[in-house]
Image (tube, rainbow, N blue to C red; front, side, top):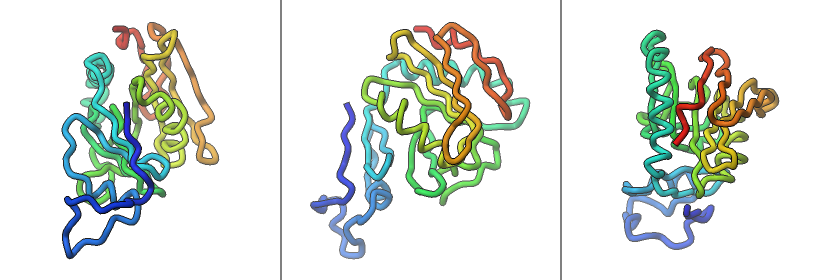
Length: 204
């Protein structure tokens, strides 16, 4: 289960009792003020701070299997792959998200020191969990398209049947090319990845 914090901090937590700092006025400021939260990942989605528990081993396996599959492509092209341990700043809204997998060029621009800028990415992937169904299926396609992410890969292991969806080709801040296949089939990751993805790697 995830927790959604309000758009404004109504009561100032003790961690913010610093005379040199004001009360966070935006979700971005609230996110930046959060301490490390072991066992949770924090994101800002459509003007709400969302805390989600880390996934199950099966959830993590999907991201790792994708990483293993893409490793030869990454090495050949000098790219970088990150499994759920990198924050992305969405261009435009400046909202921070933490995808389950991020594929980026080695010189991807950053927002400040630690966040990769979304418009410089190659692909992001999300693995759907019971607590992220609406966000991953409905909200994040809008967010990633508007932020200029060329490819959004959705690995839906809670669907019946389980599916993989490739979102690509952005027009008017929306993905207009959407291909969905059952897990076990093959689906194409378009340019710049240009790879046939055997989704059987995501079978539990």
